[in-house]
Amino acid sequence: MLKFVKNHMESITGIEIYPLISLLIFFVFFIALFYWVITAKKEYITTVSNLPLDNQNDTLS
Picture 1: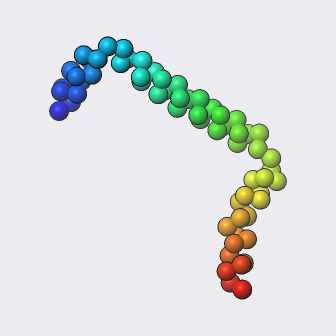
Picture 2 (picture 1 turned 120 degrees about the vertical axis):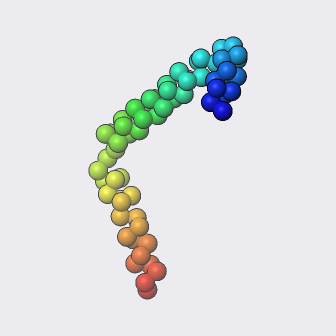
């Protein structure tokens, strides 16, 4: 099965760029996510992390 896929993919011209593009998208996404985590404000992180706890108080009443 792998030989069939490999031989089929080698016959397509210009296909070698797709793995590079997907790696670049993956890398850029995680660099942007890392930047957002580093620059996020502590108050925002605290507010978002307490949201599930605030919801429980409403349902118990």
